[in-house]
Amino acid sequence: MSRRSLLRGIGGVGAAAALAGCGVPAAYVDERDRAGRDLSARDRTLDFANWPLYIDTDDDDTSKRPTLNAFRERTGISVRYTEEINDNDEFFGKIGPSLMNHQETGRDLIVVSDWMAARFVRLGWVQEMDRAAQPHVAKHLNPQLLDPAFDAGRLHSVPWQSGITGIAYNRRKLGRELRSTKELWADDLRGKVTLLSGLDESMSLLLQGNGVDVTRWTRNDFHALCEQIEGLVRKKHIRRFTGNDYIKDLSTGDVLACQAYSGDVIQLQADNPDIEFVVPEEGGELWAESLMIPNRAQHKTNAEKLIDYYYEPEVAAELAAWVNYVCPVPAAQDVLADSGDEELVALAEDPLIFPDADMRSRLAIARDIRADERQEFAKRWNAIVGL
Image (cartoon, rainbow, N blue to C red; front, side):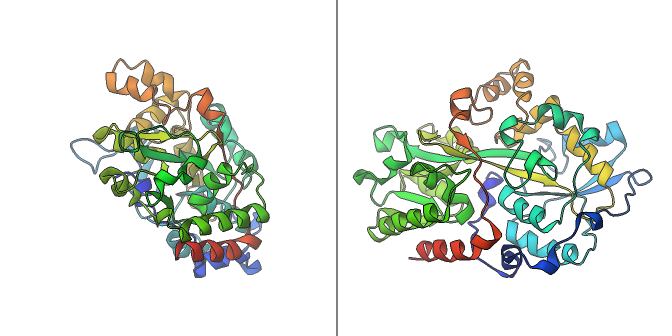
């Protein structure tokens, strides 16, 4: 199972989501009140919270993490690494009370999906990083990921890994190629298509299929899409909405085509070469899950050093070879290509890890859902998913 496969469809408006979605004024933290006392110089540790299955491990002992061990040996900084993030909203609810009350969270580094990162930035819950202390980030970060709408210039976030939302399909069972999102609505796919249930996960690719520029989509674009999808659901063209279980449906042939994540498909292809992944002609969504330093973190300097370490091409290559998502460090491709290892060379040539120029030209980072939109949009989308 891949890391992204653990993600369940999000889109409901629970207490934590409502807090961020409504932009509760009392929750906002001013820039001047975000820094904590940095103990990095005398306390050579840091606390890093991440998702499960999202870092390299030793083949013989999965409790050992080679890149983290190498960082400790080089810098003397020990990393307390926890795999405690299983759901963006759940984690938001876990650390939100501390952050809104101007308290430290016990974590120096966290990884959340960019749509959730947008909430943290909007609420002023994360600190600006010292890019002068991060030369590898400045030099090697993929330019396509450099300037998302929610964090201009990536001052508060750095991608941990990236990925693509596109279309996966069983080419042998379908009997033809798919190249367009619009082709999902063909008559021979009736009842054999699934979409992702999460609002933030599903919407952008579908908007792109309608020719919408997802960097500047509008409320009208969204509601027009909902009308279209609701009609397809009522006609029973869309089989169902899924979380990670689209993987099983696609593998068994119960579904012939679906929205999918690039990293999942790489793993599926190892067992079933008939599974194809395509970035549609109209475009696909490029997303990231990003490293952020919460307010009042006690080891900010140590955290910045760890982030920069993972942007060294050799380290990024080692991580990419294990997680199989889109590597945010393009220079890591040459490291793998020059390794002399047949499997690593193959990874360097895989466009789902290092997209080629043609694929990159069709990828876009969608603007995030604004605070004044989220409750309205989530209610409309969830009503469709529940039909």
